Amino acid sequence: MHEKARRLIANDGVQLLDSPLWQMEGLVTAVDGRLPVVARLQTSMRQLAMIQGDRSTDALLFSQMEQTFLHRAMHLVPNSRATWKQVQEIYRLPGDAPSTIIPHGIKPVPEEEVPPFAWKEAGEPLTILYVGRLEKRKGVQALFEAIPLVVQRHPNVRFVLAGEDNSLHDGFRQATGQDYPTYFREKYPDVQAQVSFLGRVSDEKLTELYGACDVFVAPSLYESFGLIYLEAMNYAKPVIGCQAGGIPEVVNHGVTGLLVEPDAHRPLAEALITLVESPQRRYEMGQAGRERLLRSFTHLQMAQGFARVYRAIIHAHQQHQAKEGAL
Image: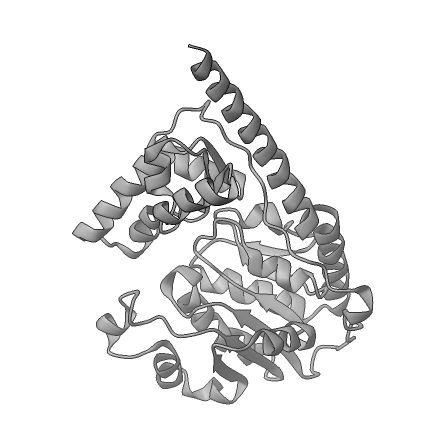
């Protein structure tokens, strides 16, 4: 990446490098110092290692590299207040470190492509959608434990889980000898008919799933932001998540959805049952979520935020070079 950046500077007049903290592709360029580097902050590899209990040499090395990158980048752009707070605490960054919080944004689907609300009463078939990898950090074990409690009260409810199994990499398969779908089917055989594991799906299929569901749930133990909630809100769906990381900055509890404590299956089940039993709340939260997205989380708002940061960084770098040249 650094060599490519050098060629772009020489041949195309590139003035700035934007790089995510994840995998640190801009690390060498930041250390080199000749080109200003903006580091975008999401969930760090150190945070992920802490959640998964990973104390390996590789995890320690990545943590040290992240720290170097954060201190050498000219400007830091967290995607949420929670991300910035976590990174500051973990890596002991000074409070006045140059930073600008820019939330993620997505392109709103046209109003005519938002499905009309389905006024389903309790007892009618109803679909709850989960989207994400099947892994510990995404809170799937709490969801697994909540599903039978919901189905016991409302046998008409169907759960659709879209996302690839990650049991091989998060330690679950090593601990249990099973992947997540197999584990669920063996532990909860009585609700197999109400649960579908789709694995990884195409973008087209995902759009179809968002449009068809009645409630969206993603009980992650931690999300730096929570883009999946915006994706569901784009289709005017009520969402359920956890009081963790940047999720409360996206989901307005009691207005656009419901938030529960992480890794707590009974409160999660009660939140799901609350929305299953109230079509009015599903409608109101879905509409409020769509309005919140249009007001605060569009792709254009995100682009405008980055453009302001880029202009300021390039201007500051040019001034610095001019001063050095005058010496």
